[in-house]
Amino acid sequence: MSKIKTHGVVADATWENFTPQEHDIWKLLFQRQSKLLKNRVTEHFLAGLLSLKIASNRIPKFEELNDILDKATGFSIVPVSGLIPDALFFQLLSERKFPSTCFIRKAHQLDYLEEPDIFHDIFGHVPLLVNPIFADFMELFGHVTLEAIKLGLLEQMARLYWFTVEFGLITNSDGLRIYGAGIVSSSGESIYSLESNVPLRLKFDLKRIMRTKYATDDIQKNYFVLEDFKELFSTVKNLDLLNLVDQLNEIKDIEAGMILDNEQIIA
Ligand code: HBI
Ligand code: FE
Image (cartoon, rainbow, N blue to C red; front, side, top):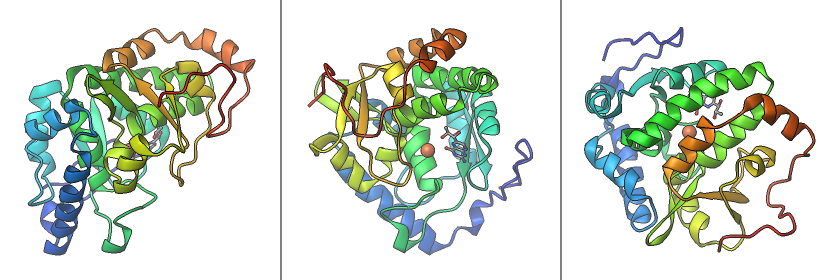
């Protein structure tokens, strides 16, 4: 694949460079997660995985995914070399572009790596970009966060991203389901997030999320549960950033795992 220039972040997305051993890592991760996610992940994720023809046999080619993704929601994957600056990240989302890393973890990192790799990005994040409502939410989130950054609200928006796009849960007619990419791409957390009695599971609540601290290098102590993706879209659509600044100023942050009195936990 040719070098795709993306806003100064040029990643040499040469799919041909992947070795057979790296395709094998993909296969191992894909097969393990597909088994674990059965009856645990939202049906919208499975629908996206199917539409994109993402399979276990090899690491997918961005060009192939983009052909399908563009027709579905106008999103496209752009290769980046790793974590990119916040403003650039949200700029890309606002243009319906999703930045994906182009390397895959090593065999000794199967269960955890601190930075996103191609399995986290492509298997974890991209299938939901096929869903029109989720895609609209992601683009809107990009636009709104670019505004929020000007008001000093980046940390609050990063928490909203963290507790939804990365570690969100959702309910469907069968019960609690996973949709966050950080859980979808993690074997341990695919089980823990739904079945452990350690984490605090609360109903999706914007201000509560924006006040809740999280650790990026530890298993989650909080999960927030959505009714549906429309709730996510309308929350960001109705965000009144100026009002939010005042409202959040008078509220202090809440430590991870802390429950406030009269909060209803979701079993
Ligand atoms: N860069 N490649 C990449 N992937 C991300 O998920 C990412 C990023 N840079 C910044 C960023 N995420 C954060 O702004 C959000 O997670 C809030
Ligand atoms: Fe991610």
